[in-house]
Length: 174
Image (cartoon, rainbow, N blue to C red; front, side):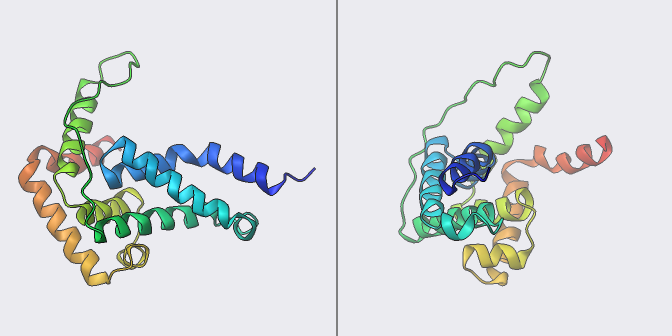
């Protein structure tokens, strides 16, 4: 029995929304804005679903729409309202204080970057995209991706020096 396009879209939303929300949160720095971004991207994906559902490119399409929407929001000069505060970690048992401190430090540092710098870092290091792919997704030149990446990393070194040991710790743990 073949699923209907509507059932396939529902399944896609159920299974891929958590990953899309993580990427959107890293882009926006705010849970509510991330949810809005994913919802807008999924609405556009739904409109194109008949063309997408058989191609296997639905998630790539949705992510690209997310990044394009985020760029459009920057260009309009929309200022995101972000309330400062710390959210408690979900209880999982055990002592996760080191990981929690690292997550909080990373989150605070990312929020101090410009939207463009944050998006470039998310694409390059969270999504593991090449400079050319990031440039294509954001609709900017490769040079812009390179310069924004360099500026973002330099800024992170200043505002969150504790993160510089992260790659060393991760490399040693492997």
